[in-house]
Length: 396
Image 1: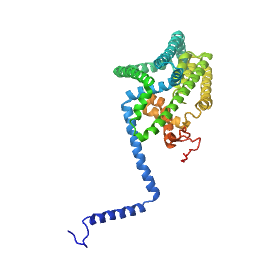
Image 2 (image 1 turned 180 degrees about the vertical axis):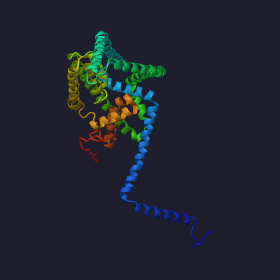
Image 3 (image 1 turned 60 degrees about the horizontal axis):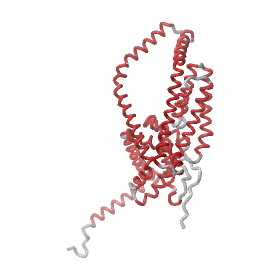
Image 4 (image 1 turned 90 degrees about the horizontal axis):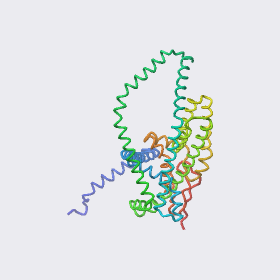
């Protein structure tokens, strides 16, 4: 036993601990406040970036599952207004599913039939125009500023043909990979169709099961945020469908009036491309300009370019602000950045799903930041472009 004047055994450890606290306090005092704040932000940002990186890596590894899932969700959002309208009219759910799915398949099949029909109707004239355009370009190389001889042109063509023959082995070796890709596409299409049927048949049940993954205290916030995000995705899909239709009709009608061949296939291509906001319809519209340049000459190509740019200006300055309104609050700068980032990460699927994902994340983040599930109010702000000041909840 220790005497009354003897210190307890832990006193040495307490002294070391106190000394460490003093040293830590002195060190913290020696570091500027701004540097401490920057360091605190930095390591937190590193953790967030690492988590996002792991998430993106997992999505890329599971792309054969993620892409069909996202396609099914986007198609469900496109069908949702008509589907819920039928349910409100007391149409049986199974019949509403059949009408929505079969109607969509009929529309897509009709568009494909129109494309094939016009290609078959105009294939002869297109082929003749191609030969004439090539011959005209050949004559321009001879009579133009380059003054190439026929022997030089033939040599260039022979070199190009030799290069293609040299690459034939690589092309054949990639045939198996192409076949595998086609198999993946077919499998993904079947999986997306199955997911679509499940979402239409029991979307509410799937969402209730998903909510059980959250702690009980977090379920009201997760439920409200998810529903707000879903409404945003539905509004985005509905508006983008209307905008894509207007783009396709405008550019396709302009091509038909100017006598550009394959106007219907061009319109269908523009319709599909318009689902990538801002850049999609522009890129696909250049196909019409190229066809006009090859088959109709530079003046018709110039007028075709005017039509494409005019439709894009109408979309960007009238249709998007008027139709989107406050439903999808994503700034145009954010749209361009997320489309470019999505394309760099995942190619065409990344560009296609970037904007709806950004809109969903934006609304969910604002909903949680405003604690809107407590007041029942819809999110009023935007992550980078606030339109209405944040409303604080007044507690009684």
